[in-house]
Length: 118
Length: 111
Image (cartoon, rainbow over all chains, first blue to last red; front, side, top):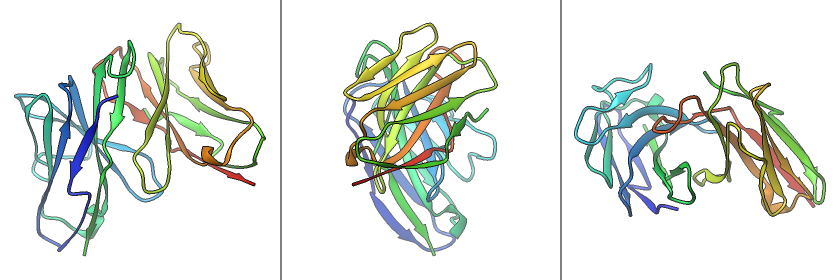
């Protein structure tokens, strides 16, 4: 399976500020995604990070609030902008690739970034 | 379309069996199962593909009923290490699409 690292692992931020989360994968992958998970809840897809083009956002998520970059096939960033306490959550990077751990497309998750907004 | 998982929570004694179900109202291409322990990232367990066979490793296996658009995860002779929240992620198109996850089933195994 792919090894995925995220930075920072956790942060406490003030309302109105922005935080950029980095995701690094140890191999080239086709697809990278960003999810949010609030305590005790399911995983909600924020967007698909497209290499060389604008990210594809899910309903309820917009580029101005969650700008995403993906400059190459192993790296992506998610910025949480103008934060409010409602943005407190765990943000997870996920990758999908053929044959990472078998002959099928499989999806793996990074360790997550735990964000608290005061 | 978010898949529906049942039950929401289950408590087992070591050695007991459990079944977790994941249903969709739309036709599925694949179902992926994950386990997440508190404070950790979800860990991939297995993938079931349309037309595929039942999968399994160790005492955890899963099946995919295409007629019902339902997948079931079977945990046999449960161990303390099986505790966690189990999520199914569903995919409607083949490849290159993100998974949509159910709300999860919280499994607690007690001694």
